[in-house]
Length: 169
Image (cartoon, helix red, strand yellow):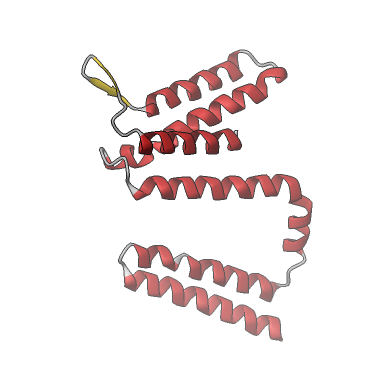
């Protein structure tokens, strides 16, 4: 599903970018590929529920991923109500790929990750938590809100410093 999502998203983005004048208009209605993606998502979901057969589960996952990629390519257009080239689509794609990659890694290396996290000491956990909190400050700074960004950054730095102090004891 994840791989077909990526392939569908990239092909849709490339096609729409290289052929901006190619549109399907019927009865005065412009059919974006969002609708084709939605049909694939609904159809694969319905088939997976109504016709449960393990032999077809991979096919349903591929169809769902293809539909998700088509819908995902239209995120900027849907959220801005008209700007197909919105940077929101890029953010959406990067987020989905990042989370998807983490889930793939988690499914394969779960035991190793659990051991690595459980074996951390209290101070180390605080350091990592502080770094994570501090990294979220970039969202505030990127949104043009320096005061909340500085507050989150300072909180993360304080938690990380407490973790370093605890780890050093």
